[in-house]
Length: 292
Image (cartoon, rainbow, N blue to C red; front, side):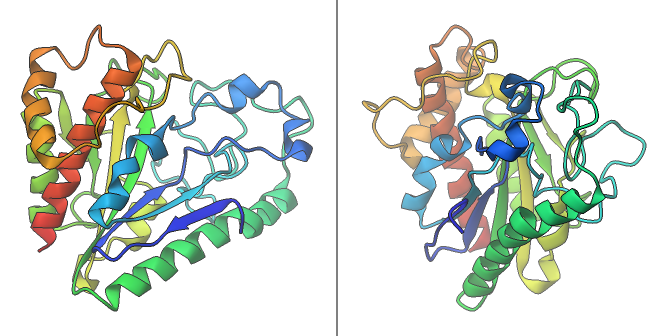
């Protein structure tokens, strides 16, 4: 499947990146009101931000298809993961802000939703399940780390400004305490707002695959996009090609510096992304240490 990119490695760590894709087939794009709206809720630059993960031995799985086509982190039945709260569905018809995505009368019907699920949703999960099975055959335990980001302010979804680090564990059911503590400790050391199982408790991926009793720990990391990019410019420069690859030692140093400079305020987008990558490197190092 050309829209699924799998980079297998051997460490007991899988990174899933389900929402960074921007590809929309023409037969769908032609019915949309605008591409700007269609890509508005993209988890920008996740693959680049976590580009160092391969050097940790982590397997990385991502889709190049936009979440506007289908959201592979939603319940395939269409049931809401957050009953009673505003959200978007398996095949979104509106943005997080409630803006319609399709021209009137051209929204996907039930048959099209089923076809999209078969074409894009099921292959992604088959690939993810295969990587989990492969690594479980080699390791007693592994961590599935689901990578996400979102605009810091989305009034329809949550009040005020979202914390920088939003760790989701499905209320403790998808990951054991030692793994969660390892992640939370690094996040809080930055001095940035951090919450566990707040507004975002983990989507379908975290809830479906997180089975600590079966040796699979799953955590969703939802980053507020101000952590690593200028949200007023949703297509920032990617990571600086001149910066050294983030190392654990650098990550430890950057944590303190990041806190001192107020979370990167006033820093250019490339430099901010480099600093963010170093901190994320430290988080994943802590995960690998905790998993043993």
